[in-house]
Image (spheres, protein in one colour):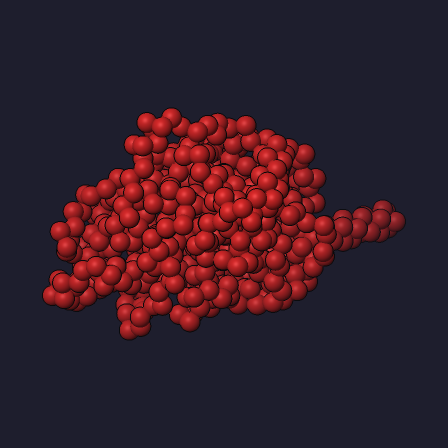
Length: 532
Ligand code: CA
């Protein structure tokens, strides 16, 4: 009896020890993800907005972990980026090529594979893949784009309006989920995905006067006229000047004969968002802009002065939304610290793509140019990533699924197309890739950005706008703003031939057999609306 009891105790001790060792080996993952947060709107990335100090909490995360300087998406648009992250496959294989597609949730995704090895999986916030999430023990999502104020959330039980500001609510829900799982001995992955700072930029009321007393720096390319680009850059509809709607996007008065309903890319969701506010919220919102709006009417600004005014209103609201996201990061980190989870939890900050913050005179994303192809990626992994380290390898959202799987000790399936970032996070220097593949599929559509694919190396970028049979080549070392198109210059003939070959190799390797035909001349003519 005594021996049996002793043996039982040894067994219990063994099981407990092994259990502890296992959970020590398998860290938790907190994936904090936002929408349209450009790296150059993060202080740690050191862009031209750094002086505004937009993100102290995210910057702290970078000081404690690794910042990826050359992090990119494969297709710069909301839904597709998320589908790439879930599947580790390019858009043409996971089937979600453009917004408006419906994600086939029955396919292989990393959350399903993590569930199988005992991870708790949760998805809270913006999902944007149309079909309901699969592979999550818990999910609570914003339907579609979601709304900034008093949004509906969808769960397995249905839709329910919850009062408050979207960024705060998503953070509250993420914290609730973390707190309610405190007794669980399973490792977890929590995807906390914000709507902010997506169009139409509506910050929390407490941030409404933030930055009012400073002039935000302007991008050096605010008045770019795309003279050297292939023609699609001159056919788009995403200009701060010509398309950013003073009424719907900027909550200003319809000055300069501006028709609130003008253009294909009008976003009335700003208007719908206002209708969702309570009377008290709406009154505070209107009061926040009233003086500046009245002054704009009095001053009668036109031309470049008016563009500069629009830029200031746009960037302030954008950075105010970013401030909310940054505070969310702060609250989540504070909880990890106070709960003791901090030591064994990998924290990742990322966003689905970059964004034009007036760069090249634009807002929105989509292009393979660096402002929108780049994604922020900051990873804090205590005991593994060296604090304050910067990695410059070419990485993509295609690599996230593989990374999560390796972290959890799961073999990466052969049909995933990216590569685990774990060796880089450990500070190792494995032989890494030399080039990235990109393909954007949404045209004609919002903002009228032509379909294109291309290759980016650490030095060069070659883009093909196949519908219009046009190319661009940039030397990113000499011309980081991509203002000088070198395609067709005799001096670069060998370089172009080499890049074209490598681009074809990438298309073969990634099995991109999608239609890349040149469109008939009549069709092209219809979309060549040069406003220069
Ligand atoms: Ca987005």
